[in-house]
Structure formats: structure tokens, C-alpha cells
Amino acid sequence: MPASRKLGRTDAEALARSARKLIVSKGKKIREFEAGKAVSDEAITAMLGPTGNLRAPTVRSGNTLLVGFNEERYEEVLGA
Figure 1 (cartoon, rainbow, N blue to C red):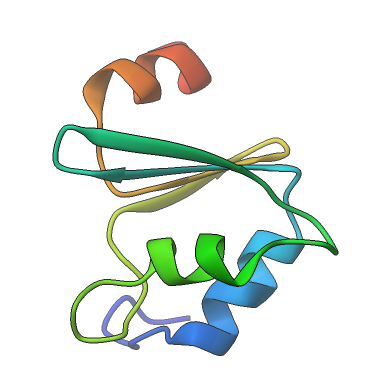
Figure 2: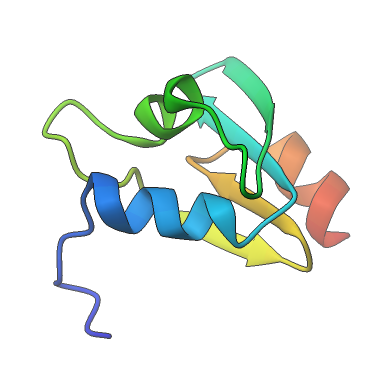
């Protein structure tokens, strides 16, 4: 999929359902959600930016989905 393609709510929900854990970073605020089949509407909304598109960057590592950027969380999850 091209990087220029905008991903909306439906795409965000599909990504969240395919993971077990969701970590969303917005600035210094970090929220963690249970993902999978029972992912909450609140979690999906947290994944979206002000334009209604999926926040960037979005990275999947194993069963964890990282949305937004927080250096400490990336190091913790990715071991980088």
C-alpha cells in the first residue's frame, strides 16, 4: 500500500483487531488499550488524528500496535 494513501477509521479498526495490545502516543500522553476482537470505540478514536486519519507513525511489532511516537515506548517494544 502506498504511503500516500490515507487510512481512516475502518482501517484503524482493522489494524487494532489484528493486534492484542495497542499503545497510542499523543505528545507526552501515552494510553494503552486491549486490542483484538473486543477493541473499544475509545481505542479506535485515540488512533485517529484531528483529520480523522490514522496517526503516524504506526508500527506493528508482534502482537503490539504502536500509534504515534514516543521514544521510550519504541525502545521498550522494539528493543531499539
